[in-house]
Image (tube, rainbow, N blue to C red; front, top):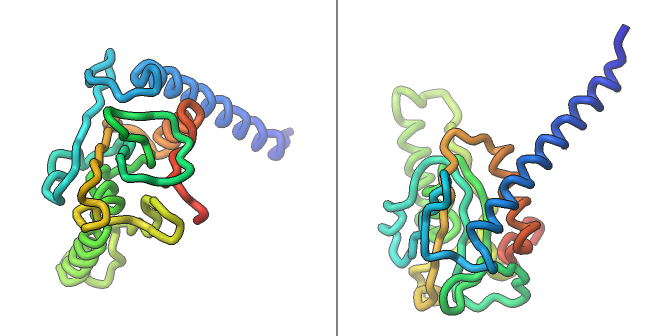
Length: 204
């Protein structure tokens, strides 16, 4: 009548094929936008617009979208063994790429990590003390894994002495209406085209 093992295999194969097709589209677009492995001066490419944000102070986050998207972090802060080929002006190199449904908060977690943790705890406390949150778990995920410029470092504060004299550029590809599965293919396509940035140390 039917073979559930075969059915499972059919679905997995179809998903794998669809992911590969999406990844190929992203890879082609990334090669076009960042031709010669360089961040372009322009920001519009057909129906795709990228936003470039130079961050120095926490208030600079206000200009970054709070919606879903794919992002790239570049800096001239010296980090050893970075094989990612994407570069910007001067000595800027891509050190991280990621995706999220709430880009602004995610960038805060990477580059203003202390403030991110404080803000998260405030939001959690306010929710639990509210009528809406009584007896319920806080709905917002916490991101413990962040940018790692060195082993053992997990999220930084770029307004601190160690980092404040370096330049920090964040490029955002807005992807409103996307799913995490789609955005993750953008991450994999980026690694395929430019090499995985050094501060994406998932297991360090």
